[in-house]
Amino acid sequence: MEFTTGGRLEVRITASDVGERVSVRSLTAAGERLGQFTDTVGILTSWTGGVLGITRRDGEHVQIEEASMVAGKVVPRTPARRRGIPSASVRELRTAGARGWPAVETERLGEWTLRASGGFTARANSVLPLGDPGRPLGEAAAEAVRWYGERGLTPRIQLVPEEHALLERELADLGWTAERHAVVRVGGLAPLADRAPDGRVALGRAPDEAWLARYHRAGGGGSLPDAAWRVLSGGPSVWFATVAGEPDGTGPARPAAIGRCVVDGRWAGFAAIEVAPERRGEGLASAVMAELSRRALEEGASAAYLQVERDNAPARALYDKLGFADHHAYHYLRAPQD
Image 1 (tube, rainbow, N blue to C red):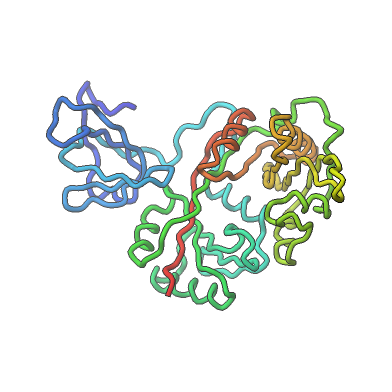
Image 2 (cartoon, rainbow, N blue to C red):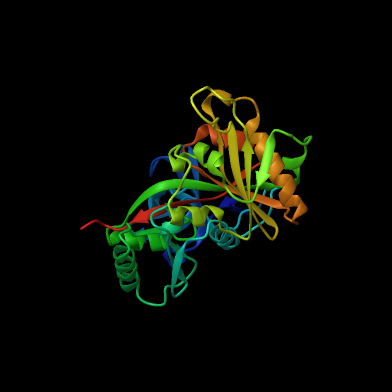
């Protein structure tokens, strides 16, 4: 990380850069001129009382004493991408993700989209902010609370830390609290399909009773409420994958593995990649994704995305092996309860 001009460290940011993405080098403790350096990159959300507030890409909020800063500069919003990883803006991926997991009911509030689907997943029951709500934030937040309250739903807004650092700070001042942290990951589609066809994986256009019996959100019951069904089966071009399981003598065999993929232009969005606990380690998740990728390639897609909980280490390790890389983090803010 280069901060120097003519061999000298320079601080080239001021309080007027609040809202910009910055890179700051600071000492571990103010006044310790021989201390270790720490580099912090993120959105400068505040600079008051001699303290800088920076929100990192993963959502972590860092405070840095001005006196400890030895270098700083404004940096591009989108960092250089890794070779072989699809290039995309956060807005493009958020828009594709919303189309691929479509809410049953939506309403526009300026450049915010209010989404409701009977409570099935936070993604389909939260505000998607892609710009200005068209009114003061306090009024927009109150309108969102009213709208979700009328539907018996908890008001939530889905935020990307680096895109919405200032919005998050303002909502936090109104009592909204963070929860449910996740990461959107992207990868090339062709490498996922680069393996021999696997006859164990069956593809279909709708989730049948067997597929739902494995899907954790269906609770093993093989059925879903209508709103949930509409979200799950909605999207531009949706495919479901199933690997049959072995009968255990107690009833119909639950699948050994399942998966879902929605094809939308150049993007293939993966979700519900699930494997029976006793069958993990057999490569079934990779097989499911390979067959879905093959079908997505046939329909013209070239890039893949998926979402994973931030703390789901096993899933993240699997997707690392399949060539996925983090694109952006997101989480929800929940409105204060009465």
